[in-house]
Length: 428
Image 1 (tube, rainbow, N blue to C red):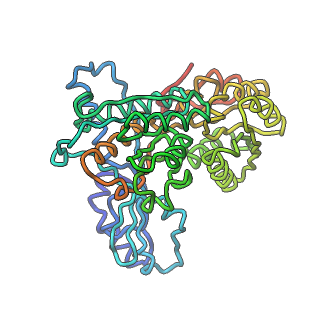
Image 2 (spheres, rainbow, N blue to C red; image 1 turned 120 degrees about the vertical axis):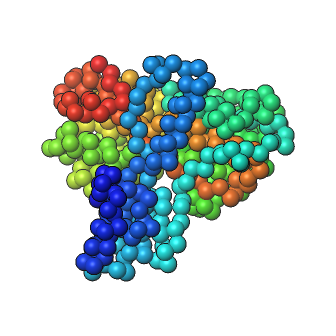
Image 3 (spheres, one colour; image 1 turned 135 degrees about the vertical axis):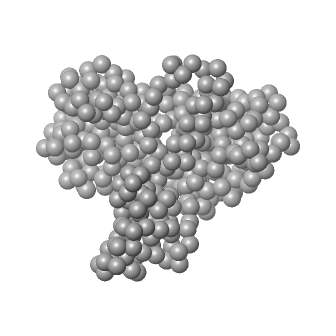
């Protein structure tokens, strides 16, 4: 069932008919599980409304509407209903992977479990703070996506009703991609009396896990808090840590890749064996590629000086395209990856915004401003008295399409007009 208004009004009658036939109902209306649907995948309209409210706030605060771009944003929500399984005539199943990805799960007894619910501060929850907080933002490298995330954190604290210099003071440290500096920055924050650390990367989170055990740590700009070592599950985690995570849009980029290059069979990527998030990304992309009948050629690179040579070896392996997974090392050295692909005249698909400007033809990126903003909302909840151990790690949905038509032309990748029309940003 689609999200059409007329059809949505008649949802009950459709579900009743399906129940008589003992067949499942799939919808694009993610709030329909209570009516007996099986799987719902669609837009999180609460998040859409919240974003609209933030636009209104920006205009109230003096921004000119004509300077704010219209964006096509679909924050996704997935809901599954395990109770329906017992009513179906065929042996349908819900895989553990799908249940793990779901934001809402109805169990066998009909109990609804909301896993990835963003809990922004409401007016009644805006309690006065008991102290002025010393917040330290710790970053691993300085690229545009990190800047967007930082901007989201800074503005998110204000949207949560907190006032800088009265409710909190904030300091920002950046390691400029130097791993030994990360631990020093955490120690520096602690020695200067930080009450909270907000980490913007997996390496900074991992350093905080080891060194900042007695103050709240809020993470963001991270693929997986669990994979980074902050917990066993999103709900069962270290008592002083919570945060926002987001995996790259692998299924979506593979779908787009096969649409643009239907006969392609081999793609390449570089990964850093020393980065837990890079290893995780490589594993997920490999699994997705297999689903689409595509072979992934993945090569390791341990330092930035190894990336150029590894990239040249990768493009020599008879690949049709590069699908470069996210990672701190490959992000800092992405220009050399794009250069090798350009020389081989093969397109690059990527996941980080700045990589579209550095030579990727197609980018499906998370909204990094939202990455930071949602982390700020979690920080505000902790500052108002909530215990981090009671706040599950929360997944960030929503992606944006960025196209570089010049890079695509050099790689002889034809981009249809319909896709150009759907893109948030087009680099000509």
